[in-house]
Image 1 (cartoon, helix red, strand yellow):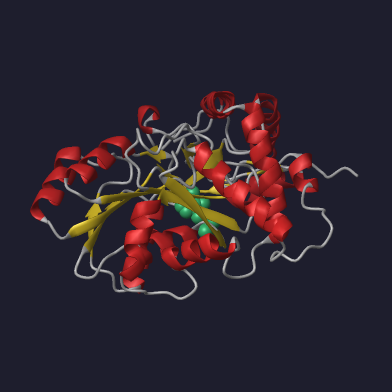
Image 2 (tube, rainbow, N blue to C red):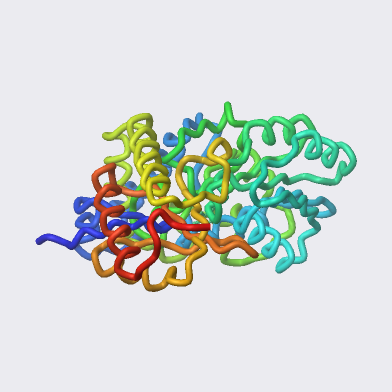
Length: 373
Ligand SMILES: *Cc1c(COP(=O)(O)O)cnc(C)c1O
């Protein structure tokens, strides 16, 4: 059996290998069986290992898309009478602020322009002047633009002021090397359809076990999405509390095996060269990028729409889509962009093939090449 190979340049789900796709085809099994518990337990260990966590860290699994992790961390890790600091320079941190509002969580939103990194002195000032901040939250790679945040520095500051540091690493986990200890991360998170190149429906929070245990008596703001309850249930029964995404978990197991086989560094280098090929292709067609290259995570390129009456993103998208390539609109208010991501099981030749089709699409719709601004 062969499956058509599509090149996904959208920010996840990403292109997967056939072996990961096929790993979902397994005999039916009840996830309460011991055989399945063994798989979950191994998965948990491997997820911690990917970010070099020692035995002081654990992984808590959830059935849901990546946003469930954000919801879980924000609603579960805040003691009564304490505040969250959200450092916001993009769409995903804005989502974190919306979650805080939804649960009425006391929070401070530190707004930073979407094309800039936060000023660390300002972060420190904020922590110094607000001793009731307990949780510091930021996004590693703001996937809406591709901006990389200085997590290690923010983590250090958080710890200096006795705060817990939570990072949304959904779009970097298993793509950029991450080290829990060295990067001063207490909690990070990801979803199986991104960095590990698995399927949708499985998400995980990796964090310090001690801090999860400390959260036992924090106010419970959700029944389904509570970190401690999900953690504790697994410790007790070696099962997820509620029905897990069974087939997605089989695929995740295969994907992780392939991650370790490829190697952290080799995989990172592959994403980097794919990203370079994307920059090169965009540049050759005259596209301008929204984020300065030195501020990018190296995983998402955000190109500005050209100033050409014939440019129509939808049409260009459809032209590429029909030929097996998916491109994606941007997520920046007040600025029209589209994104090309270097996630997934792809390499430089795929990008070269993409740009041949993309150029053809521009010519087909009479968009001037190189593009004009
Ligand atoms: C993809 C992503 C998420 C999760 O989005 P879902 O649509 O819920 O999968 C969260 N944060 C970041 C930074 C992401 O890139």
